Length: 336
Image (cartoon, rainbow, N blue to C red; front, side):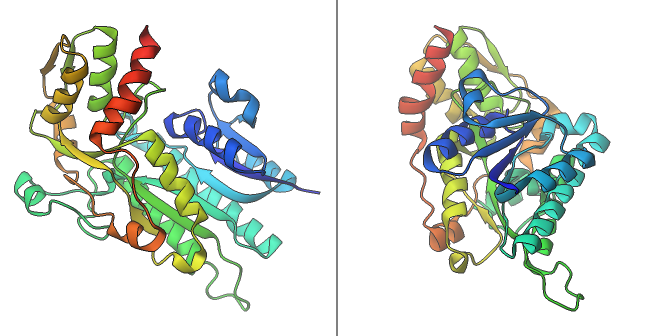
């Protein structure tokens, strides 16, 4: 008999670490995690972990034979900055990996005659505003606006959203009998900031990199201009968004992809918060023009009114609480 489980891919990353802790506390269904890397030591006992590649078809076949998944949290991805150095590999991991898991979810949905829930973290990188004047004019971007990503990562995320919609609403639409569909739900995150993991190459990581450098007493040269503005979110709110979206009744879900956000800061304002708690921090600006152009194309803020309306989204952490209660105390403790 197949064992019931919740599958988390990319589990060793920033979101996965926090999600494992949250799901292990909140639910009774065992967790199965996948990543190329071992899990952090503090969460290893909370899940059955496989160090494996999501592109391994034999692995997926084995998963289908051994497990019945109530939900799949598909976190595995190559991020925006890293993805630009190897777009072919990035496409394989981000798109082919997602496609394989969606097909797995579709097969299991039909087999068990009940939808497998597929929770997908998407990104602000799906947006691509053409210039700063437009970015100022469209201060809070809605889900369907300016979907013209400039990075392979952003293009992958946007296409995977469309794949999820297809498997949820149109898969096997020409078949004689209507199949049971996947329950795909996606959240588009702003720049995420974790107090417990090291920034891992995201284009929005200039913010958390400032904090970590300041806590270590090291100088930091920010790779964007002081006036650059994008939205951010503390990691506890990111986990809250994923869990709240997963818990929402199907009848409340009016769209498959939702913006979620918390607070919007310019790089200069972010620096100001860092200096408030680390007044001796040495933070300068040395813009990397290529990475700068990517951040300039992202929305200054995201309109998350649909998530607030449909499933009661509300962040717990504004900028002040994020820095005072979550980021600064925990990052400081890390380096003491």
